[in-house]
Length: 330
Length: 59
Image 1 (tube, helix red, strand yellow):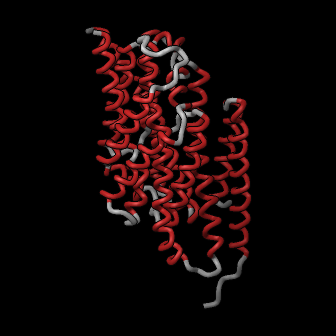
Image 2 (image 1 turned 180 degrees about the horizontal axis):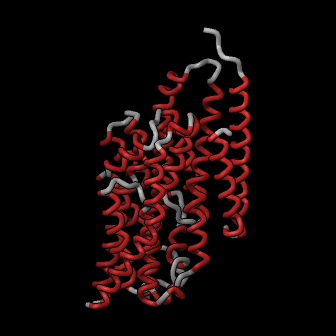
């Protein structure tokens, strides 16, 4: 019976990863599609390939953080993880239908925290781990913004005398393939690992893995396959918000935004910090807009996005706590 | 004052406020981002000032 329940929850975790790909991975191709470098169909295939290929390059530091540094391992059970996933999936679907680029990662972390609090109170939260995650909720998009702004300045300064901005954009159209690929690689590395972390926590809790065990290969491959398939299915509402509503992006801006976000994701993945890929690319896009002039950024849309971020962890936590309460009643 | 410089100064302040909350081994990162924002704020303010002082172009 326990094995069946475990299999069901692992399947739900992989479904979450699929929804994550569907919901988040659209960010990596928003600029490529909005600048018409690739057709939507090829763009999603491109992103999905790099999402999957990420497992060859990055370790599993982020997965270990999720498994050990969010809630006390002693409290983790199949029901808790199931409730956490239900809360996070519900939050993701609501924000998806509202067209808001919120973070699946923070929904997952909020879901785990909410279900754990509903089960055993606030004492089971690992505050140090949560504090690091909270710091990088703010720091990751700010660093992405600064990096993309600086990159834009360097590029624009290097061509300012010749005034060949249009030719520059033509040249950067194809470079966007590289930057979008790099961003998708970072996205696959950071986001797929969150699901791996949840499954690892589940395997440890049920005695199928040792306390300090590494993520099994089948989990790594399963998580990357699920996120890649989700990306392949696409999430067009968010592509629209990210690619055109926030600020108008040209190829040179797309390259700078994606490269800055990719650099940030590589760094945080190497450090084992789960960050929101959505937040990071949003910071990059706003940085590009701000390099033209602040008015180029649609601050109303950006503000709506920020509010969605603020409510993600408490919103997902509440839903997961409710899900845990319902599961417990049955 | 230049709005962009104010925005960058605000961002630098946020990064500096995050330094004590950041794990010790990653504090350099928060400090570096704050430093970049301070440089950007200074650069943006100077750019804005030079634009204002530039005489209008003859038509």
